[in-house]
Image (cartoon, rainbow, N blue to C red; front, top):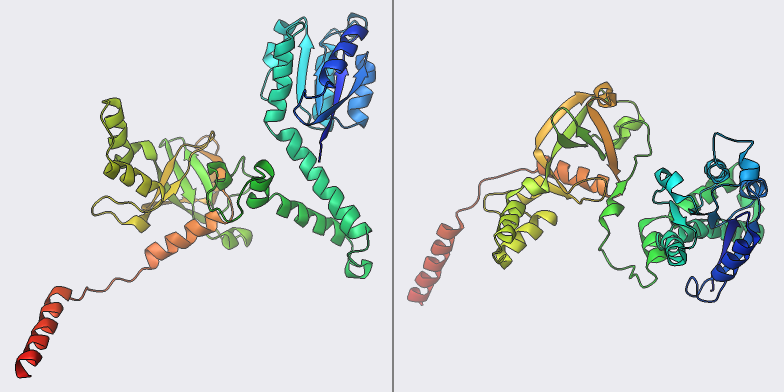
Length: 383
């Protein structure tokens, strides 16, 4: 199905409006997608559109001398951006002859392009769509539309099945949550994704920033006093029932400080070949199967790094306890992210298995084998 994107273009120069509209609506500007543009010749008109309509991208001029005279504290484009942030999320590209005046506004979602730099403008717009955010927002709206019109309103679900007040809203919320599950999102970003694949992207491990205001299982904290990361391992039910007075923390070591990594790093820096054995040892610690002699594989849990957290290795033998209130002291503890479901529960289960294991002495298998062989020889001699 061909996607149609809606742009809002704001500029007090009618010729520029028409030129931009023609450029964006040209076939192939965004691949197979269709672009439809709404234009506004004044910031006043644009403000009404932003507050009452929905767009996938805004292309904004910065100033209009006639309108900005009444607002000396800000430019018209800045006021549109401020209003947009109050009403909806939409990527913005400033297209202005005064780009240097607003470079501080530039961010991942706000681009600044000087007028006349047509290639830069096209690149900025395509960058906004390469982030996949407009597609994701459209996907969420489509899931909502399909559920309410195609399932509820169509009569597929009987009104008698939804008598309780708020049931439809609750079911929609759960439906949206399901549509945002890891497998659904992987399918959304990659239509060729194989649902049977068990490979995930590291960012799928975490909720960032954390959703809950309180501490929960899987929270990763940075202890500023020690310069160390730690992982909360208390059962989630204890937090839900307000039964936690002391929080049990697992110390997380930076992967770069582990011998498996440092050995490989030193070999690479020395321009030496990295043997298959050393590669296997590094892969082993990242796959929770540490291969160094004398190490207990079940003692460690690898936490993959992302843009907001480094590669970490949780060591189940290095534990500490702090009072719950202490973790709310931002001067020392900073909650970086939360390990998501089901990964947090899997770590807790691995932790429980490690401390719940029961060791018994090994049978002297070598001696037993000799006895069995001797018995067979004796039987042979008797026969």
